[in-house]
Image 1: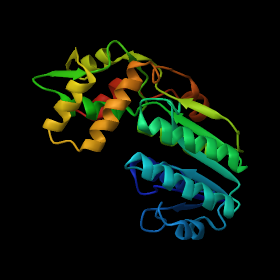
Image 2 (image 1 turned 60 degrees about the vertical axis):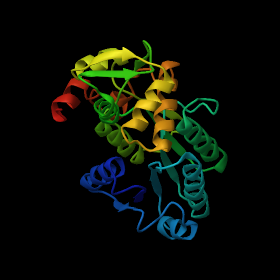
Image 3 (image 1 turned 90 degrees about the horizontal axis):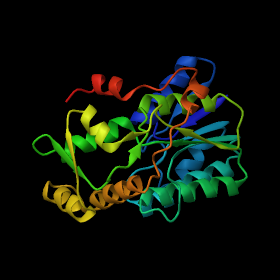
Length: 263
């Protein structure tokens, strides 16, 4: 079987490609922005020619560009008759969500279902490493101020997400989604405390202002603020057992990620 992985040199896609290559039974193609740019339909069609399974790791950047990129990949998968698309999505896929990437993920899922291609979808929780990075970015004198109130999050390690994608690539299409999360739904305050920070509530406007003052780009300030409003609304709180179901082992804990990524 020929399996292609978009973003095959990135943190998630690269790990998926290595896991599949280590499995040793199939031809693995790690696609990159050089070999299969998301914004070049012809290059994508050439890259997916003869591919049986596509692990579709999402693009990055401003949401409008991501929508176009994702449609280009799906159009190429349809044109090339890819037999199974394994899509990385997110827990929040509500088109009315305040989080811009909830819209991109929701639209991509709808396009994939409408394409007629057999599929499996990983709806991942917020990556543990990413969320810890955000805490470190906004920390001031040992305290993080976030507009999340008492909301809960079920952070999931990137390694677990990669393993779930790789596992699904080796299965028959499920034509369903899997909620891939950490084992526990934790308050943002508890996550901050585990990372060694105090927690203070703040408003979205104050949070955005603090990011801009620290040099964050306006686009990412907008994205982070929308994400935390989505968190505050409870859209990332669900905890499932699907990491264990797909990989045969429990999710990596928050403490294990903290130990591997000390401050």
